[in-house]
Amino acid sequence: SAAEKGGYDYFMLKEIAEQPKAVADTLLGRIDAAGSLTLDEVRIPTSVLREVDKVVVVACGTAFHAGLIAKYAIEHWTRVPCEVELASEFRYRDPILDPRTLVIAISQSGETMDTLMALRHAREQGSKVLAICNTNGSTIPRESDAVLYTHAGPEVAVASTKAFLTQLVACYLVALYLGQVRGTKWGDEIVAVVRDLSKISGEVEKVLETMEPVRALARSLADKNTVLFLGRHVGYPVALEGALKLKELAYMHAEGFAAGELKHGPIALIEDDLPVVVVVPSPRGRSVLHDKIVSNIQEIRARGARTIVIAEEGDEAVVPYADHLIRIPATPTLLQPLVATVPLQVFACELATARGNEVDQPRNLAKSVTVE
Ligand code: AGP
Image: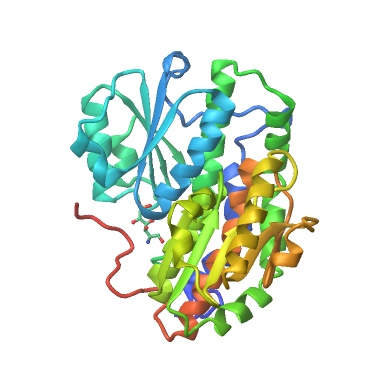
């Protein structure tokens, strides 16, 4: 009913709008004033966490994209090797698992059969499993050694939005917690990240306030057949997520690529007026990547692409090459997906609407996939 949708036309719109609160709720009570983490729910003894020599993330779909981003954070902050695998592929390749492997199973619903089978396989090999889940008391957390709940509130729309952002927050918390437990040197960068995490809800809010041009752009592209998405570093999984949203909702051909791979093949796809969304890393910090992606934007534009550039406020280098510019607030590099994903959600939702598609219930899809 309209009341359930809180005045919005679709649950998806309501859930996109709820993201600032969802993100804040996932952080609530988990970082103290001194910036240290208290994750009491993680009932895996710290002695075990100190011995962990590998992290393996298993998940499907959007949750898998959260896992891909988690890898950058876990390896960078803790120096523990991290693999990320589609849950549906995991157990069939006889993965190397032992009691020193920490498996993180990410699932909004907690009922995804592929993810459940992957975690069962991991536990059979003696690995500890930590679930990141949005649904209290669901199967995946019940069968895991511990659970960190994302407090996004119920997500009704089939396309995952607020659950994704809170999965990212939970992954960052787990990565920081692992670092804390293992005595990782708490450099200035990590201190800044912890501080900036508590400001991120406000940054997501700011992005939401500037979405009208994104909606107008989406409507203008309603008769396109293909949209490509490019990113680097954590922007690469964001590109994959942007493409998945468009497939699910707009039923368009959409693909995400690592921008560095363009020259290894995908650049052949570029033709006149093809919309290409580019997620640009911050010009601060790892600026080498920024400069490389600016070159990519120039290259594809020279070949006719219509460039839709998502870039940090104050990034002037992209301006000459952006046919459409979507601004996002400056954040530490690893946190950028929390703000960069939001315009892509809005873009896909508006395109779906413009194409007359059912936003909350896309064809052929179910909210939780309980078959393998
Ligand atoms: C997201 O928009 C999708 N509907 C889908 O990829 C989903 O993320 C995937 O099926 C995993 O679901 P889960 O998080 O409930 O395990």
